[in-house]
Length: 137
Image (cartoon, rainbow, N blue to C red):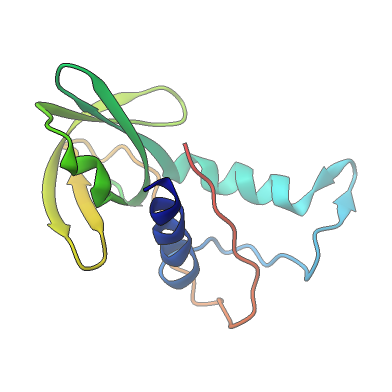
């Protein structure tokens, strides 16, 4: 299950969302920091933890795709849950609701009332062969 989730997130990151950072073909050290560290600092605010609560907590990662929408893996919805929360990398937590799910792509869409998330930015600069990475909560 975890492997499927990683693959889904990677596909999303590669095909739909990215940041406007052009990495060189191989990350090089620059003043003690790598380009990868810079990319991680840029995209980390878009990665959220998804918490499904009932008698116990189940966790997943998600990607903020808008100021109040998150894409995550459908596998987490197979467990019974009463409440859903989105937790940001800076520790803020928001009640969320399941907007929809797509069994074919194995994705769910969650929303929060507040427009408090930092979404990935659509990039018109992506080209075939560009570096892509995966970041999870």
